[in-house]
Length: 217
Image (cartoon, rainbow, N blue to C red):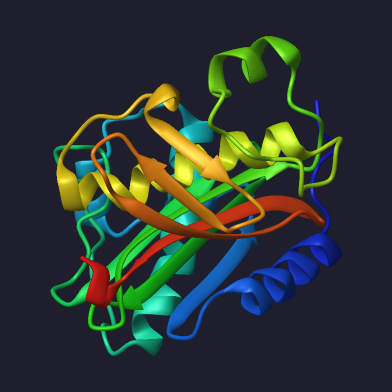
């Protein structure tokens, strides 16, 4: 179990995410706090079926970040409803992604003219348990370029982020075995033939951003 996040970690992660994001992608993060469920707009709250307080707090934290990013993009007050697939329904002309672990929520948004699809995932900066690694990794994965202790965790986050980026484009459900990751090349490929770019940071948390450039959609 990871210790609770501190405000200094939130600041450090925000800077790391901004530094790794490609041009045109806005990112943000927030420590999940008591009462964050109140940041859900009424329509958002109705669209989210989860009733567990922890899940609603995490959703509220992630959407609070997204609201701020969308306001910067000219969409003030937009209700980010949960779509049929479980992913948020973004405004016309915008792509984005939300994620959270137990303590931290993250979000990324971009105009589809430059970035056709986005996916993001956040994980604690800890080694991935062996039993999970065996479910995630396939022979095609290339992770030697990453920190040895965190390589499995980065791989796990990368496949989660790639799925979020690829699904809206291809509408295909993908398993971990359907996504090959090359961390040195900063690229992932799906069994549907989709090529997705990857960037990541490892401190103070592992965050992977997967994206498809607009001209490759």
